[in-house]
Length: 439
Image 1 (cartoon, rainbow, N blue to C red):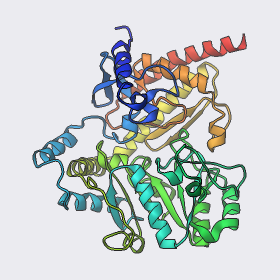
Image 2 (cartoon, one colour; image 1 turned 90 degrees about the vertical axis):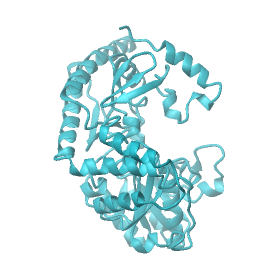
Image 3 (cartoon, one colour; image 1 turned 180 degrees about the horizontal axis):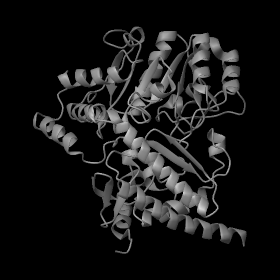
């Protein structure tokens, strides 16, 4: 069947009449790669299906949550049972306690946990808590690390280690952005300089231990240890944003792999099993400052929603009880990365490929990518050609050079082989683009 997005194109035009940009989250609009986003009709296993009848091997996985694959029968079974009992109560349930227990057992730095509905809520609440606990105002974030769309964190990096934040979106007051200090990821000297100047007023450092929002970038050896050491030196809290990497890099998250103990951890995506759920947790003495145990207010009508808790419980149980789950999926991820890289080398491309557990990413760059500035040197035009060629071949990647990709337990060796073969055809189109550029 010839690849077409005729119905999706019409649906996108219709959506724009009612929804800003036609989407409810910007990257879905394909603004970064151009063209029309497929409108998805259903998903199962490793595949998603659009309204035009196209099937895709999916490496987006709803941006990370679908680690078991789409529509896993055991998760659906738990959801159906929960649905029959009602959709929301606004009252405590046993499901919340059981999911909290599973997460605390998996992530030792978390002694108490509070559920919310999104990663943005989790990071926003963790920062408020950190300011209350330390009685300080400023926070430190890293260029290229995304922590949600609340005002404190929609901030660009300034020029130099001591430059205060500049709002990265209209509507963010400069008075709020001014309390956010931004430094480059993987640069411990710049972080030290910021602490030397502002350390007595820094409440917390928030970091993606494995950033996935400037493409997948890995921490340099010893870097996270240095971040942990400087926060302890100055009495600031260390917040790990593991909304993406939690239960993805490993069952216990990036902190298990890198053996770092943060003060607070933000989680999301996988813990909701594909439904809206997130959380923040940490040391008991800090978390007990949250209302009603303490004075720091945070609430949510749908927090701990029984459907999300049921899906999250089913997902985490399967992850913990399936023999060698992570070993198998991580091995599959490595095989995919190696296969695509071999196809690239066959066409003379030497680009960067990164893997962290079941996450992976590629940069169309011949230089080492270790921070936001180096990521931005990637050839976005070449990636866009590669992306659309893969889409036409039936492979769905994130529609941006600056997003991570995800493997699931539903992907098969046949999927990996088909994806590698498709990448060869896609690289042929990229090679033609480069030939045209030379002329």
